[in-house]
Length: 267
Image (cartoon, rainbow, N blue to C red):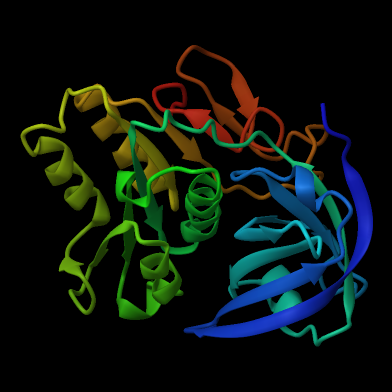
Protein backbone atom coordinates (compact mmCIF):
# COMPACT_ATOMS: atom_id res chain seq x y z
CA UNK A 1 0.00 0.00 0.00
CA UNK A 2 1.36 3.39 -1.01
CA UNK A 3 1.73 5.91 1.83
CA UNK A 4 -0.65 8.85 2.06
CA UNK A 5 1.30 12.11 1.92
CA UNK A 6 0.32 15.48 3.36
CA UNK A 7 2.31 18.23 1.75
CA UNK A 8 2.15 21.96 1.03
CA UNK A 9 2.00 22.61 -2.71
CA UNK A 10 1.93 25.82 -4.73
CA UNK A 11 0.04 27.00 -7.77
CA UNK A 12 2.36 26.63 -10.76
CA UNK A 13 0.01 27.15 -13.69
CA UNK A 14 -3.47 28.43 -14.42
CA UNK A 15 -5.53 28.22 -17.60
CA UNK A 16 -9.03 29.55 -18.11
CA UNK A 17 -11.17 26.91 -19.85
CA UNK A 18 -14.19 29.27 -19.99
CA UNK A 19 -17.66 28.88 -18.51
CA UNK A 20 -16.25 28.96 -14.94
CA UNK A 21 -13.88 26.05 -15.65
CA UNK A 22 -10.20 26.29 -14.75
CA UNK A 23 -7.20 24.04 -15.22
CA UNK A 24 -4.80 24.46 -12.30
CA UNK A 25 -1.34 22.97 -11.83
CA UNK A 26 0.18 22.42 -8.37
CA UNK A 27 3.57 21.27 -7.18
CA UNK A 28 5.92 19.98 -6.16
CA UNK A 29 4.07 17.02 -4.60
CA UNK A 30 6.30 14.12 -3.42
CA UNK A 31 3.62 11.51 -4.14
CA UNK A 32 3.00 12.56 -7.75
CA UNK A 33 4.75 9.55 -9.33
CA UNK A 34 2.55 7.07 -7.43
CA UNK A 35 -0.80 8.58 -8.48
CA UNK A 36 -3.01 6.52 -10.79
CA UNK A 37 -6.06 7.55 -12.82
CA UNK A 38 -9.22 7.55 -10.76
CA UNK A 39 -7.53 8.57 -7.53
CA UNK A 40 -7.98 11.97 -5.94
CA UNK A 41 -6.33 14.51 -3.67
CA UNK A 42 -7.92 16.11 -0.62
CA UNK A 43 -7.21 19.83 -0.57
CA UNK A 44 -6.95 21.90 2.60
CA UNK A 45 -7.10 25.69 2.57
CA UNK A 46 -5.43 28.39 4.63
CA UNK A 47 -8.48 30.62 4.40
CA UNK A 48 -11.33 29.62 6.77
CA UNK A 49 -13.85 30.42 4.04
CA UNK A 50 -13.58 26.69 3.20
CA UNK A 51 -13.20 25.01 6.58
CA UNK A 52 -13.36 21.37 5.42
CA UNK A 53 -11.06 19.85 2.85
CA UNK A 54 -12.36 19.30 -0.67
CA UNK A 55 -11.80 16.23 -2.83
CA UNK A 56 -10.69 16.80 -6.43
CA UNK A 57 -10.04 14.13 -9.03
CA UNK A 58 -6.75 14.34 -10.87
CA UNK A 59 -6.64 15.39 -14.52
CA UNK A 60 -2.94 14.79 -15.14
CA UNK A 61 0.47 14.31 -13.54
CA UNK A 62 3.93 15.50 -14.56
CA UNK A 63 6.17 13.00 -12.78
CA UNK A 64 9.37 14.86 -13.73
CA UNK A 65 8.26 18.16 -12.18
CA UNK A 66 6.11 16.35 -9.58
CA UNK A 67 3.16 18.50 -10.54
CA UNK A 68 -0.54 17.65 -10.48
CA UNK A 69 -3.30 19.10 -12.65
CA UNK A 70 -6.90 19.47 -11.58
CA UNK A 71 -9.83 20.80 -13.58
CA UNK A 72 -12.59 22.48 -11.64
CA UNK A 73 -15.84 24.28 -12.19
CA UNK A 74 -16.56 27.09 -9.76
CA UNK A 75 -19.78 26.00 -8.05
CA UNK A 76 -19.17 26.33 -4.30
CA UNK A 77 -16.92 27.73 -1.59
CA UNK A 78 -14.11 25.21 -2.08
CA UNK A 79 -13.86 25.58 -5.84
CA UNK A 80 -14.22 29.36 -5.51
CA UNK A 81 -11.33 29.42 -3.03
CA UNK A 82 -9.12 27.53 -5.49
CA UNK A 83 -10.18 29.80 -8.34
CA UNK A 84 -8.85 32.80 -6.43
CA UNK A 85 -5.32 31.44 -6.00
CA UNK A 86 -2.47 33.18 -7.78
CA UNK A 87 0.90 31.79 -8.86
CA UNK A 88 3.06 30.88 -5.88
CA UNK A 89 0.18 30.70 -3.40
CA UNK A 90 -0.19 27.43 -1.55
CA UNK A 91 -2.67 24.83 -0.33
CA UNK A 92 -2.21 21.46 1.37
CA UNK A 93 -2.56 18.25 -0.64
CA UNK A 94 -3.40 14.96 1.07
CA UNK A 95 -3.05 11.93 -1.17
CA UNK A 96 -3.07 9.98 -3.29
CA UNK A 97 -6.42 8.72 -2.00
CA UNK A 98 -8.93 6.15 -3.22
CA UNK A 99 -8.76 3.18 -5.54
CA UNK A 100 -7.85 3.77 -9.21
CA UNK A 101 -9.30 2.44 -12.43
CA UNK A 102 -8.17 -1.04 -13.44
CA UNK A 103 -6.65 -0.76 -16.90
CA UNK A 104 -8.21 -2.80 -19.73
CA UNK A 105 -6.35 -5.27 -21.88
CA UNK A 106 -4.45 -3.66 -24.72
CA UNK A 107 -6.67 -5.32 -27.32
CA UNK A 108 -9.88 -4.19 -25.67
CA UNK A 109 -11.73 -1.02 -26.63
CA UNK A 110 -12.01 1.47 -23.76
CA UNK A 111 -15.31 3.37 -23.85
CA UNK A 112 -14.85 6.47 -21.70
CA UNK A 113 -18.09 8.23 -20.78
CA UNK A 114 -17.66 11.68 -19.24
CA UNK A 115 -20.46 13.95 -18.12
CA UNK A 116 -19.71 17.57 -17.22
CA UNK A 117 -17.09 17.78 -14.47
CA UNK A 118 -16.62 14.00 -14.68
CA UNK A 119 -14.18 14.70 -17.51
CA UNK A 120 -10.84 15.08 -15.61
CA UNK A 121 -10.21 11.50 -14.36
CA UNK A 122 -11.07 10.07 -17.78
CA UNK A 123 -8.70 12.50 -19.49
CA UNK A 124 -5.97 11.31 -17.11
CA UNK A 125 -6.90 7.68 -17.81
CA UNK A 126 -6.66 8.18 -21.58
CA UNK A 127 -3.28 9.92 -21.31
CA UNK A 128 -1.99 7.29 -18.88
CA UNK A 129 -2.96 4.45 -21.23
CA UNK A 130 -1.42 6.07 -24.31
CA UNK A 131 1.81 6.75 -22.43
CA UNK A 132 1.95 3.01 -21.68
CA UNK A 133 1.63 1.93 -25.27
CA UNK A 134 -2.13 1.61 -25.72
CA UNK A 135 -3.38 2.36 -29.21
CA UNK A 136 -5.43 5.60 -29.06
CA UNK A 137 -7.66 4.16 -31.79
CA UNK A 138 -8.88 1.69 -29.15
CA UNK A 139 -10.14 4.54 -26.95
CA UNK A 140 -13.57 6.04 -27.62
CA UNK A 141 -14.14 9.24 -25.64
CA UNK A 142 -17.84 10.04 -25.10
CA UNK A 143 -18.22 13.50 -23.58
CA UNK A 144 -21.58 15.02 -22.75
CA UNK A 145 -22.89 18.28 -21.34
CA UNK A 146 -25.86 20.62 -21.42
CA UNK A 147 -24.28 22.90 -24.00
CA UNK A 148 -21.07 23.54 -25.93
CA UNK A 149 -19.68 25.52 -22.98
CA UNK A 150 -19.66 22.37 -20.84
CA UNK A 151 -17.37 20.48 -23.24
CA UNK A 152 -14.05 21.93 -22.11
CA UNK A 153 -10.45 21.32 -23.16
CA UNK A 154 -11.66 19.53 -26.29
CA UNK A 155 -8.48 20.34 -28.24
CA UNK A 156 -6.47 18.18 -25.85
CA UNK A 157 -8.80 15.22 -26.39
CA UNK A 158 -8.40 15.51 -30.16
CA UNK A 159 -4.63 15.81 -29.80
CA UNK A 160 -4.54 12.42 -28.09
CA UNK A 161 -5.76 10.81 -31.31
CA UNK A 162 -8.68 9.01 -29.66
CA UNK A 163 -12.12 8.71 -31.23
CA UNK A 164 -14.02 11.71 -29.85
CA UNK A 165 -17.83 11.49 -29.67
CA UNK A 166 -19.37 14.55 -27.97
CA UNK A 167 -23.05 15.26 -27.34
CA UNK A 168 -24.93 18.20 -25.86
CA UNK A 169 -28.52 18.38 -24.71
CA UNK A 170 -29.21 21.54 -26.75
CA UNK A 171 -27.28 20.37 -29.82
CA UNK A 172 -24.80 23.27 -29.72
CA UNK A 173 -21.81 20.91 -30.01
CA UNK A 174 -21.62 17.34 -31.23
CA UNK A 175 -24.79 15.28 -31.39
CA UNK A 176 -28.02 16.53 -29.82
CA UNK A 177 -29.17 14.50 -26.82
CA UNK A 178 -27.82 12.57 -23.88
CA UNK A 179 -24.33 11.09 -24.08
CA UNK A 180 -25.68 7.78 -22.78
CA UNK A 181 -27.90 7.49 -25.88
CA UNK A 182 -24.75 7.78 -27.98
CA UNK A 183 -23.08 5.06 -25.91
CA UNK A 184 -26.07 2.77 -26.28
CA UNK A 185 -26.14 3.24 -30.05
CA UNK A 186 -22.42 2.47 -30.24
CA UNK A 187 -22.92 -0.78 -28.33
CA UNK A 188 -25.89 -1.63 -30.56
CA UNK A 189 -23.74 -1.40 -33.69
CA UNK A 190 -23.04 -4.84 -35.17
CA UNK A 191 -19.61 -6.09 -34.17
CA UNK A 192 -19.48 -4.32 -30.81
CA UNK A 193 -22.39 -5.45 -28.62
CA UNK A 194 -21.75 -8.79 -26.96
CA UNK A 195 -18.26 -9.12 -28.40
CA UNK A 196 -16.59 -9.07 -24.99
CA UNK A 197 -14.02 -6.59 -26.30
CA UNK A 198 -15.48 -3.38 -24.86
CA UNK A 199 -14.85 -2.01 -21.36
CA UNK A 200 -16.72 1.04 -20.04
CA UNK A 201 -15.20 3.74 -17.82
CA UNK A 202 -17.56 6.47 -16.62
CA UNK A 203 -17.54 9.53 -14.39
CA UNK A 204 -20.14 12.24 -13.99
CA UNK A 205 -23.45 13.06 -12.31
CA UNK A 206 -25.36 10.32 -10.55
CA UNK A 207 -28.00 10.17 -13.29
CA UNK A 208 -25.35 9.50 -15.91
CA UNK A 209 -23.73 6.77 -13.80
CA UNK A 210 -27.08 5.14 -13.16
CA UNK A 211 -27.80 5.09 -16.91
CA UNK A 212 -24.32 3.73 -17.73
CA UNK A 213 -24.78 1.01 -15.11
CA UNK A 214 -28.03 -0.10 -16.78
CA UNK A 215 -26.48 0.00 -20.25
CA UNK A 216 -23.50 -2.07 -19.11
CA UNK A 217 -25.87 -4.72 -17.75
CA UNK A 218 -28.07 -4.66 -20.87
CA UNK A 219 -25.12 -5.23 -23.20
CA UNK A 220 -23.21 -7.51 -20.82
CA UNK A 221 -20.24 -5.17 -20.98
CA UNK A 222 -17.87 -4.85 -18.01
CA UNK A 223 -17.28 -1.39 -16.67
CA UNK A 224 -16.10 0.86 -13.88
CA UNK A 225 -17.79 3.92 -12.42
CA UNK A 226 -15.93 6.77 -10.69
CA UNK A 227 -18.22 8.44 -8.17
CA UNK A 228 -18.28 12.01 -6.92
CA UNK A 229 -19.28 12.69 -3.31
CA UNK A 230 -18.67 15.16 -0.48
CA UNK A 231 -15.78 13.80 1.61
CA UNK A 232 -15.13 15.57 4.92
CA UNK A 233 -12.23 13.27 5.89
CA UNK A 234 -11.15 11.54 2.66
CA UNK A 235 -9.92 8.26 4.13
CA UNK A 236 -12.88 6.38 5.57
CA UNK A 237 -13.36 7.62 9.13
CA UNK A 238 -16.26 10.09 9.03
CA UNK A 239 -18.67 7.92 6.94
CA UNK A 240 -19.88 11.05 5.18
CA UNK A 241 -19.69 9.54 1.68
CA UNK A 242 -21.33 6.11 2.00
CA UNK A 243 -23.30 4.60 -0.89
CA UNK A 244 -25.58 1.52 -0.79
CA UNK A 245 -24.53 -1.77 -2.38
CA UNK A 246 -26.82 -4.11 -4.30
CA UNK A 247 -25.55 -6.98 -2.18
CA UNK A 248 -26.53 -5.14 1.01
CA UNK A 249 -24.64 -2.81 3.28
CA UNK A 250 -22.68 0.23 2.28
CA UNK A 251 -19.33 1.28 0.84
CA UNK A 252 -17.30 4.43 1.44
CA UNK A 253 -16.63 6.36 -1.76
CA UNK A 254 -13.31 7.65 -0.41
CA UNK A 255 -12.02 4.26 0.80
CA UNK A 256 -13.64 1.43 -1.19
CA UNK A 257 -14.06 3.78 -4.17
CA UNK A 258 -14.22 6.20 -5.80
CA UNK A 259 -14.03 3.58 -8.58
CA UNK A 260 -16.56 0.74 -8.41
CA UNK A 261 -17.40 -2.05 -10.84
CA UNK A 262 -20.68 -1.69 -12.68
CA UNK A 263 -23.46 -3.76 -11.19
CA UNK A 264 -22.28 -3.39 -7.59
CA UNK A 265 -23.94 -0.14 -6.46
CA UNK A 266 -27.62 0.50 -5.72
CA UNK A 267 -27.69 3.74 -7.69
